[in-house]
Length: 52
View 1 (tube, rainbow, N blue to C red):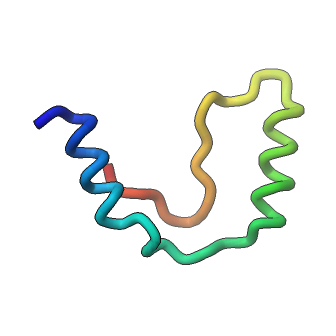
View 2: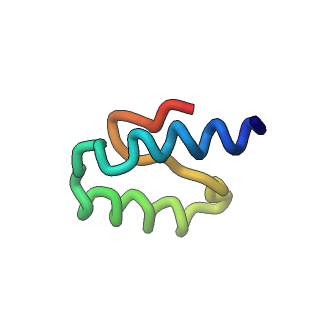
């Protein structure tokens, strides 16, 4: 099994089980990142991340 397939399977197992955060805070953080001089290509928001 490829690494991508393993990661997809693990992500599917936890998808929808993470608590909902503060959408307004995410919007503000995202807009700040987009307006920065060198925005990141990928961003994870929240206290927890999906295990990969």
